[in-house]
Image 1 (spheres, one colour):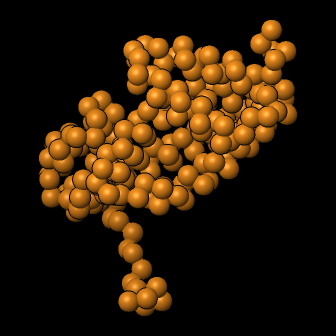
Image 2: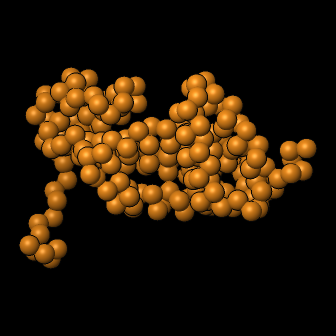
Length: 195
């Protein structure tokens, strides 16, 4: 069946949409607290729905993990858009940069779990990741134009720094996360601002 003859996907009924949202919220919370190993039946219990409802929306554990990962990226995108609407580009940038490390830790746990199950994480998140990268680039450019961030920093640099921060935090005590993030934030500021 080609795209022209494939039936259009029908929108979910209101009750089905609510159930799907409850399952995603329960899964997101469970994965954040206990890691991606939480069983689907436990997700169903926490969402207050039957196991069949979870399986109807997410036929496999990988499908649920993928949906939660995409949802987290969409939440990051919403946060970047909020930051873009604020009057102080420097504060907006550094506020988001700090929360980005928190998002990254949880995202990497899910991405690792999906990768172990053979899911192409890059393909699964390509659409939202592309839009997120563009929005983050705009946030960075605004902060650079305001003189709050070094002009030689790129969006790819930010990604590398966040990954490095998560790796450093994983290798040390969790309470070190905010200190490491603060050190990196300081390194992003122009030299004059650090003196």
